[in-house]
Image (cartoon, rainbow, N blue to C red; front, side, top):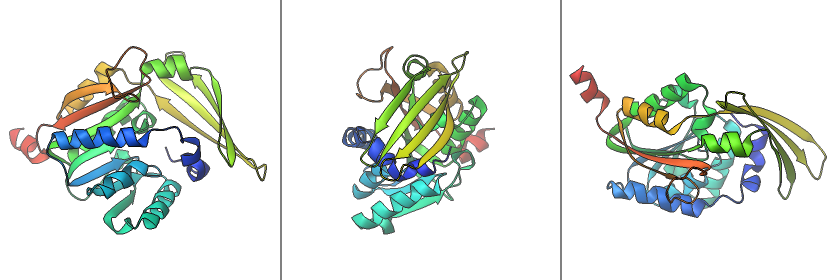
Length: 256
């Protein structure tokens, strides 16, 4: 999906996100595999707080997002920090990812991969990430859990208020529990203008995600709670995967 109007105050309404904890966890997983530097793609980077933190840590970052509006916000923040020259931004759909070379790692956070689509789309996106990954490369990404979709979002409506706008977040879970249709109504406090955006999150079971990663050449090293970064439990609302690429595409082709 591509956020449009929502991009300009995404950071305000996502203010409770603990980016420092997320960054600490992601960087630790990269360093566990000897990746203290290298090329890292942030798939669905959004407004790029994690992208920028990894850039400042010395990684050669590629920020990929379908939304030009999101990338515009990220570009402005990078310029303010003086790191714009060290960051490559690509406006791409990750279903058609083309990185023009190999990468040492990929990250994807805040349930980007839930937005991709039904299972065949999810599998395509994982395959594209795997295609550009070097052997030993690390893929760290998160997903909203089936529990969150079916029990927390479900058919509930939430309101989130930022300094400049209010977002009304309305959810409708399918009867089969395999997706949640989401409607955002964004109302600016100063002008009274309102905008509406709609999108869908798809639900993927843990065992299915493991199987897709393995088919694409990854070994699933760990799965944790994507908010506390502790053990995954039945009521975890986000699950975070760390997977390691077992072979290059050339090695696979040579063995076919």
